[in-house]
Length: 252
Image (cartoon, rainbow, N blue to C red):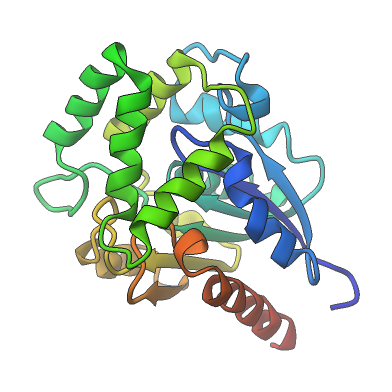
């Protein structure tokens, strides 16, 4: 690739851009990489949005995008990336979602995170951020053959930046509970790759076919032995997947 495509990397809830460290290092051979922080996290930990909802979170991130490129968003970051791809099409040349969905919460007709789990996190968060985050990390890596090492890696990466702002943690959980882009993802016109972990409990595999039906033009890849963080647990395969998809696009 002579002119390296630009990819913006967006982290998930409770995290910061440090989670992408190894991914970014491995992708820089073929791509121009910029890691972004959501408002209230990492380098943006001092930013408080009012209200802290998906439109405002996406709008703040949009202003960090100084030139059109691809957006790769993990988990909550993928939800924000989808919102930008829907509403700011001129900025988004392509979209990659990692362990993400247009709707994280379980509905009567939709597999997702149970309301009781999200509400439990919200209640725990008020008492102890560290314990809540540790529990969330455990759920994210559940089922992965390298779960213990994955949790250790994620915790170490988080320490590279300031702790997230409480309003961002609280607001982020509410977004995961309330946000629903299911009726809008068919408006995404850019090339889209959706990456999943088959063992992911936060984005159940039963949701994959439903997401594909809502956005049939999107490509997807399922990591058979990964959970919610395939770019941590299966980094080599993850990089190969990204490079293969983008290389094939340039050949079409």
